[in-house]
Length: 238
Image 1 (cartoon, rainbow, N blue to C red):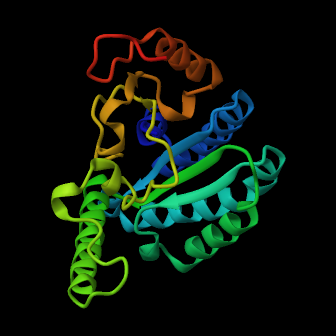
Image 2: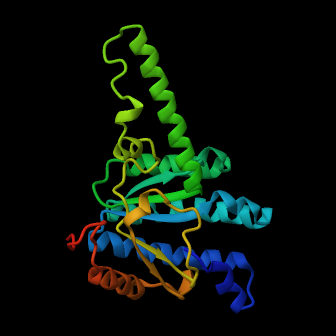
């Protein structure tokens, strides 16, 4: 969701005003996706590298997050949206962590779209975390197998499949993304869902995030519908 700062700068406003304007887009796009029946929407809200920004801006962003979670809960209830979060959220300020826990718990029983916020998120760190967890499990199973306990040693390294590793990622509760949208004219992934986006269709737009509206989302979806998805094969896969 890129371009908040440039949107504000173009209007000679503080950067934080752009971030606040971006929240309106989050509301519109989340609602549109829920109404369209899209099963999962993941928003890159705060990267692990965003801590490099001025502390005042970071603090304001965390305040916006808390306010968003509080004010948008009725909308999530109305559309049966389930909130999740990925990333090292334990490093967020206490108020942000508390708001995340509260809204996640209150929407857990919803049956609609899964809205995932990537907060203090890094795809490379996610892959490293997953590799560490997998290595730990393999070690435990080898140790258990040596002692002869039931079920020990059932997943050897030579038998590992990429789908086995997928279960160790933070997005194990989600399908891999079909479409990845980046706003503001930037044409890079910026450490976002690097494993999961291996076969995602990419769509870039010069529109800044605060100006991104439902019509732009529909343009992205129409472009996606025209793509041929072969996944390395020779025939289009529906």
